[in-house]
View 1 (cartoon, one colour):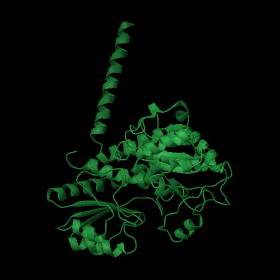
View 2 (view 1 turned 180 degrees about the vertical axis):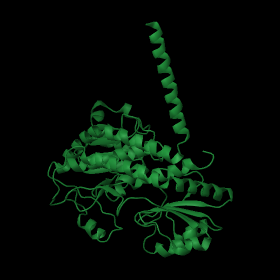
View 3 (view 1 turned 45 degrees about the vertical axis):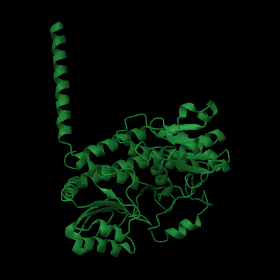
View 4 (view 1 turned 90 degrees about the vertical axis):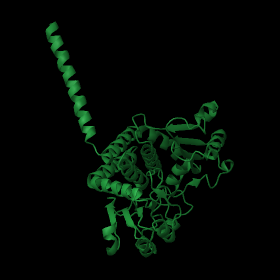
Amino acid sequence: MKKNKSLVTRCLFVFIIATMVQAAACYAGQTPAAKVTEDICISLDSVEKSIPEISKAAELIAERWIDGGTLCVDGTKEWATEIYYRAGGLAHLKFLPQYPDVEKYNQKSIVLAGYLPGGDKSDTKWAKRIRVALKKGMLVVLIAPGDPGALNTKTLSKSERENLVRLWPQGSTPDIEAASLATSWALVGEIVSACTRRGKMPTMLKSVLFEGARDRNGAIHGMPFHKKTSVSPIKPGVLGKAYIQSARRWVTDFTARNSGKIEQIASHISAQKKAGKAVVAVTTGHIWMDPPWLVSVKGVKELHKASSETISRELTGGGTLMIIGYRELFYGQRQTDVPEAVRKAGGWIVGFATHPEVPDDLADRSVLMSTGWPDSDAIVEIPGYDIHVLPITGLAQIAIYRMISESLPGK
């Protein structure tokens, strides 16, 4: 009996060692892009498991909102800007960084607040506004890993703590920014579905890059809900899960199609930096070309409110412009101005969009990748509604730039 027991123990030990060796071998052969994808997918899995808690918070929000409360957004700049401005998101939100007088909102009002550890720590005014909202009896839904130091929730009174709902996945979240955005947009989806179960459809923004979008968005300006809706009641969890599953499909598909190009881009950036040439990053933007949110690439300069003149000056001597677009890389006058700026500087383009195209004479000096989303970066369909909702742009920027950053030689 002891002999058999010893044999079983040895076999189990051998199995464990073999499993560990196999796992190590798999990890050793894993590309940096694949590792980033794995981290994001693990984070998305944890968010998906938290959908029931997200749905419960959405119920509280919808009840107050429909009953006459104002739905507000606040938090660290990067998070608040993402939730407030993205097309595919809610159209009628109060942006507290711009309208900070919390006292003017009634007790039924709600604040969606997000905190990112890697965000701008110099701004603590948002935390003061949150404390005022809690003291006033407003509902605050906070999306944050841990206790934001600026807010210091441990010092809240009992009644203030009762008005605070904290959302963060219980499972592993190796990519905190991805987990934050996924939780946030899943919550927006669940708010929408909770409203439909009460006979209301929130107004949602269509990207102004689409024909007729400005007129459509203008018609719903100032309206939290559509006057009439053909959207049927949506069950809890449906939209939140649809967003997470679509995001997971997107990131895995993007990596499968582009891991080789990601390594090519990383090598190009490294060579440019060694040669003393500039590498700058922007996003298409509707008004300005600004830097990607939430994530940076080491050695890559981020341009704020960039013009074609700025780009030409930065790239002088053959630098590289990295740009994330939507359907296209450039819109309007930029279709000619930006390529001309790159051409004038003898520069390169690294571009990401649904249909990433450059003039023929720049094709040999460009590395282009399709983001893989269809006509819009909003990835969830609501039956009976005229647009897709819940954008993936922020999460895509995190994935793309983190893959590039982790693929740089010497990482």
